[in-house]
Image (cartoon, rainbow, N blue to C red):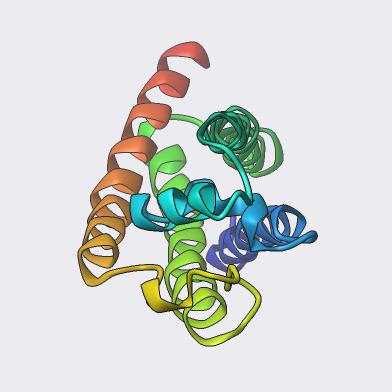
Length: 164
């Protein structure tokens, strides 16, 4: 499989992430408040815009749908479409795809869309901006690099055993 094709698959996964976010905020950013910090979540509850139970429910739904969906996308791309076999072939392809999605999430979604547009502003919480604090960014960058490396290695290891 060519590197260009794998890069395109990474862009596709990034587009899927963007689409999930766009659907999540289609009726306002409150729809994705589970991704915000506790201070914002507390404020929206105080303002009567939602409840802690609804925030928790939306967060669980997000994880239940997105995480398996992203994993399925990566596995189908790498093994069913690209025909990867063995650990190394699967690992590098998954790592590239997930890393591209991570870069899209960090730069286009977090930094630009959330940080520099009004799409993610929840009325009554403007004083709590930026919504993604420096510590959150550091944590996201760490998980986005080390986490994607570990996820790619784990999935490649499992698939190397399953496809033997």
